[in-house]
Image 1 (cartoon, rainbow, N blue to C red):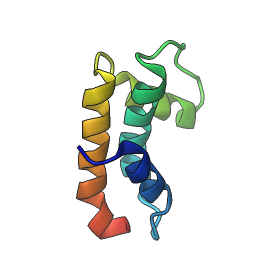
Image 2 (image 1 turned 45 degrees about the vertical axis):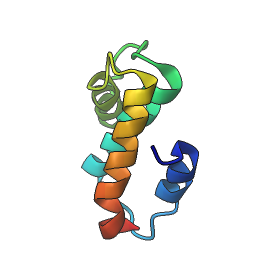
Image 3 (image 1 turned 90 degrees about the horizontal axis):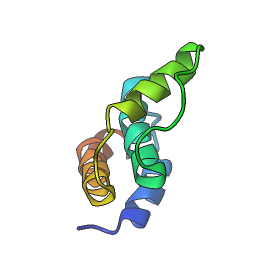
Length: 82
C-alpha cells in the first residue's frame, strides 16, 4: 500500500479544486480514518449535513480499509485534479 500520509499531502496540494461531491468522498474517508464511526448528530446546515452524510456512508469501515479506499480515490482523481 502506498504511504497514506504522503498521499494525504498530495491530495491537499491538488492544482485544481475538486467539485464538492469529490471533496466529500475524500472527507468521509478522512473522518473515518481519524475518528472512526460517526459520533455526532446531523447538523442542520446544508454543508454540515453533507459532510455528515459523507462520513456516515463510511461507517463500519476499518482504518486500513478506509486508507486503501482513500489511496484508490486519490489515484482515480489525481490525473484530473493533481
